[in-house]
Length: 412
Picture 1 (cartoon, rainbow, N blue to C red):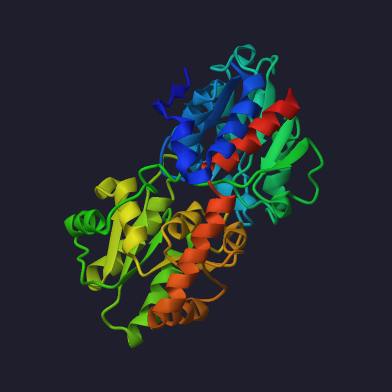
Picture 2 (cartoon, rainbow, N blue to C red; picture 1 turned 90 degrees about the vertical axis):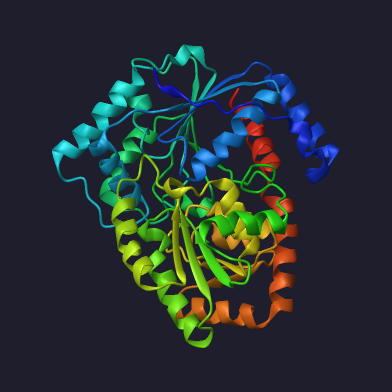
């Protein structure tokens, strides 16, 4: 069977103090006619990315509202995930091609194997996340009684057309497709029907829950980051689209004026991203030669709680993405009133509409904005406060659940 992810239990009423009782009552009213609705979420990894973080909160909360929601993981070998990473990069505009017949056979073979572990008649709605399992519906013996949704979490506004045309054949037969932004919908995509639902953060998750400065400092001291040190942080996968090498170059420019500044790159190694190891190896070279540069991963003891501490104690959070689906870390940082300097890419600008920081396009701009905020603490504080207000109003998990419940209702 596809691996079932245990998400535990959460209560929707726990969010009343944050979003208000009226918002919780609205969710309960929306969920009432969907009682016992059977929903299956399928993706490629249980940890190490925005999709898994979303599902870890959405699944138990929708269950608490009376639905019957599952989250399962597809199986695949190293070659399969290498191919799907190529597809992922190509859909974001990379120069990747699936010229080799072997690559296409690998992709279809594992989708075929995984599809035979699904009985669509056991569910009312099946949500397939991102390109890795996109061919599941095409490979299934029957689509059954379920409504099928393809949820695309990446920026496909300018895809590599050869790879997109290949994947489009699989996703065009779904009943619905969800994108983060309207501009992410490829220009030639007319089927299936499209819904726009941006992601959101869970303010009560270990990564975002209230954490005292004393506890945060203790957590980072265990990792070798000490209270007297002034540091900036980027939290992301070790992925070329997150441009970690560009962050290091910007940090070096800043260091010319502020020699005591530290940089922390905090990343996660996911099951479905084998190329991250190559990027990580490049970064370890920098880690060995610069005592003010710090490299941390989920494999070296950095969990969501430590990330929480980094985002609270950093003077600035950097997210220098070149391509970005949404960039949950931007909302996470702003929720903690930490200002952000981020790439003008994907879903990042929509998170900074209410203030919160600066959008940049170059390494020099990145360094300039970091220095500006470092030298103007009042401005940095004001941006952080404005950013949190905007995130509270637009990008919390309760809004995402409301969007999903309305979508389920429309499908049925």
